[in-house]
Length: 465
Image (cartoon, rainbow, N blue to C red; front, side, top):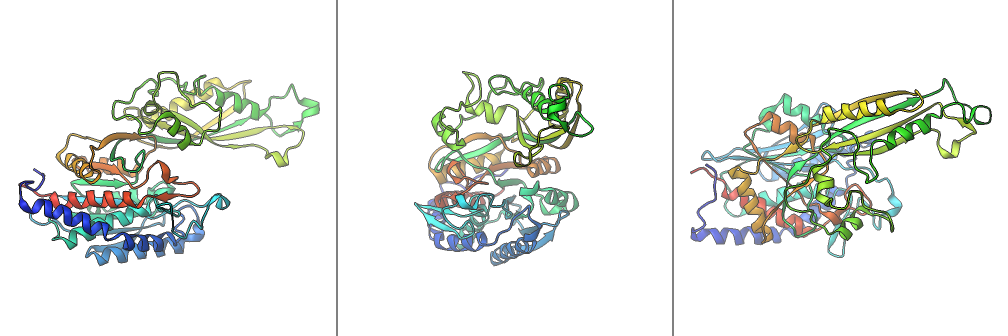
């Protein structure tokens, strides 16, 4: 059974102090390494940056080799480079897998950045740069933990450090690698460092991930556009037909109106870590715009325990190219989120059936379900999860809260299916102020240090007795 080292051991407090001191002394090293890593534009969805992805992988490989990990760069099925480093367990101790990713999203609005997104910049105690929080800060957090453990006597626990290069494009490459080479990922505890807490200084473990699906909806009404002066008012407008049917997906409170998706559930874990005003600010709501939900709905209910359908794309004639014609076709992209306990594929089909049943004017509608990733719920009763929670609590000096997240991490589900006896812990250096995937992404360096200390404690306390 995995457990703590005996806390009555006189060396126990000394080791904790040494680990915390060593990690605190690494800040300049962490900043320097993170600055080098963020300077590499390892853009996941831009084929022009394939060489940058390779550069990023090589730098991470070198950092792993420095720590004595047996390391390889693996080109996965989608062409992205994954970096895997391993150190075998000793004395029958458990093995911990530490996950992160080194690919980042593109810069869509460079004019909104206050500093160069690829030059790590310190401002008001935070480090700004693309990938600083999502997820290169987690790469350096893992390495800082291992460095501290090695400097203070080492550990018996086995270590697998996995740094993915395809997370932002859906992670298919690494998921295929799990199937092709499962021995690379076989661990007793799998720590996924790619989630976020509600605020800096708040210790959290994510125990619930919504499933995610993508649907493309296309509506056709005419063989070709026709003059709106001749046929407007008689010929059905494909854009209007699509808008009408999309509007049926939500009720007046903005909640999903498709039956059977779990839309009446309530979150049973820790409350959402931000007050209503803070949640509004984090979401960037404009003055006068209402948050969705009925009067008694909590934020945690809406984003962790219930489904969501978001219209993420819409195609018709661009405004600048509009002419006086009745549109013949229109299409939309939908993103579906469903809570644990709801089958994502079945939910996506229910959305498709709803759209087909509610289309107006006999318009032709095609709904293509392009992906459906399952949800995830962690088992919080295991000894390794309990130990991880205790280590995070000690690092933050307050109890760890169990939260959900509205997003999905398909790799987590894949690993849970492949290794049903493994325990899982989900956390990360990002928090509400990090603005991941947005302008002025940043990380609080104290979050890197706290979680590095928690992981160092975890690695030194794992043993069998």
